[in-house]
Length: 489
Image (cartoon, rainbow, N blue to C red):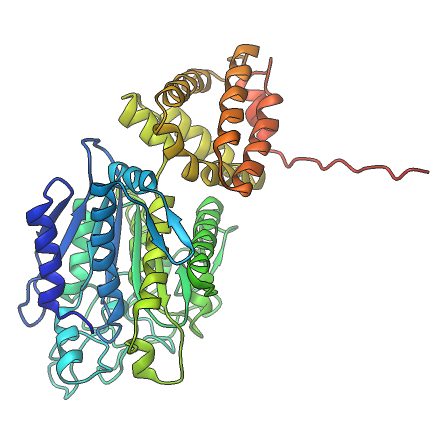
């Protein structure tokens, strides 16, 4: 029913041996407590460099057995789709072959299906509800550390879901990153560009994101975890602390999570909930992996920013063991695979791909417009979200048509040249070319929501003719006024 650790590894070895153009199997530097090797699979196709990276981790908690299986099943699905140019259909949700091709050729996808192999073997042979790794805690009769409380973010601060007692399932360990399993996650983030991280857990049907140790606020940047005492084995001090997050980051977490929820619902109607980790646990949870990977660039600004997510897959069905590893996990595994694909697809950045991979052009000017100007207002952030929604389903459509690709590249080059100088004027020809591309995409879009979004884009473009870049950006940063229709007398 469930794969052993050896069987999980065998799938990755098979893929790496027979399809080296797509898959590379990597032994991570830190073996498990009991000396087992821990493997990850790197998936990517094509020759593009400087890609965004996505890291998917499963099996941190030993008893959550279906998630490692779902991850290796997805590896097989992705390879099959890419090589045979076939779509991936998961229940009622379909990703076209071109969608999968774009993902594999634009992303570095790292998958670590079984982060805690000792724990998995113990569950399969001794204790079906074992959660932790197999650390021998000296001086105590209790074994194991909770890998998902051992990361270096507000480590050792206790909550109802985090404990300093080795007897508890949520034991934090002897120090931050004291466990080889968590050190492997640090290693992957240290040695690769990882833009998006996902830690797959069970159960409760949730899509989670930071923060976990405190409520999130977006107004006071002085309230940072870096100013909190850690390793205290006491509750958060002050208890009223609310952790700062950039508004644009909060919007990204929320919008991505909502799309994941929608894509999972399309599979078979399950209604996952998107929310911050803190809302799941009374008093929060500290030392979690998704908080840790996101916090790294704050603790050390020299590090790359990584957006950290977590899933809690499957429902509680009244029986604890069956909730963690049901007799028939296949329906839940399908939900999980759909959620992972949704996250990977949303990790693509069209600006980076078109500019750097296709044109070989630096895109810092466009990034600056997005991050330093549009992202500083609510209206600007909503516009960014609009373009992200549009780019994902339409990028494959553009790349599949040589003429459309040429038009898009020309417009991109022109847009990049315009934003390099705030006083540049958008002329009538610029607008006509932009509207022509939008109209073509409207005709080819299969989704009503995408067509509606393109209609909004069209209206925005129409207002730009004869205006300077500075004026256009200032207008985009302002909320749109709704026209009030007058009632007939």
